[in-house]
Image 1 (cartoon, protein in one colour):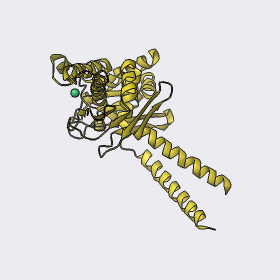
Image 2 (cartoon, rainbow over the protein chains, first blue to last red):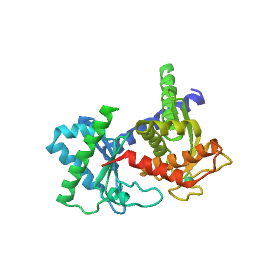
Image 3 (cartoon, each protein chain N blue to C red):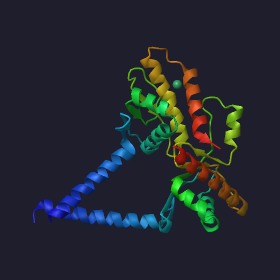
Length: 148
Length: 146
Ligand SMILES: [Zn+2]
């Protein structure tokens, strides 16, 4: 046993330990929606100040329960749901930008990202609204990737 | 033992490779596009790389402009402040883009804005703001769909 061998063995142990931690981390992942059976992985980025990540998860779960077909579209065409305003303002803030800002959400063309307006309140009606928003833009993403 | 060594090396190479291409370097052989992302405490390299991919998929002309005029994107806070961008005439192939983790669309618009300055410089024109603000606004209207 030379030193190199020892270092290598230690490295293997550390590596497997890290992988083990990573597995646990994945299971209780607080940053993502993960449904391994349907190979569905969606990163959910909450707005800590004015948003609520939980209602995004609840909305995804509801889609899974009620609308299997759209759920499949969602899993295949959306990688990230981000609580963020749909801002089209760059420099000045115009009337058009105000309309965009007030939308419940939007799809970012050329990506698999949906933006959803931050909302702190956790209620049935908010979750319902988020279900519709997520479904709508998941279909937009599907359409984009079919055409391009 | 020998197999273990091979697995070890392959794993290490894979890890290093994926980290580089996720955060520090954008490369697309087919379109002859290679852009270094110089890191900073903002840790926004991943966002920048995703923003470049959005450009490639949604506005190929802007993507080509970027690839042809810019070889380095600095992720630190420049003269544009936090969440802004910057173009320095003494390094005309670099742009500075400050974007926090969640601001994908914002990063796209700043990249297009600063690339616009890089083009102005390469064409020996004055660096002027209205044209580049218009470019930034245009790309946001193109990529945001509701
Ligand atoms: Zn400018």
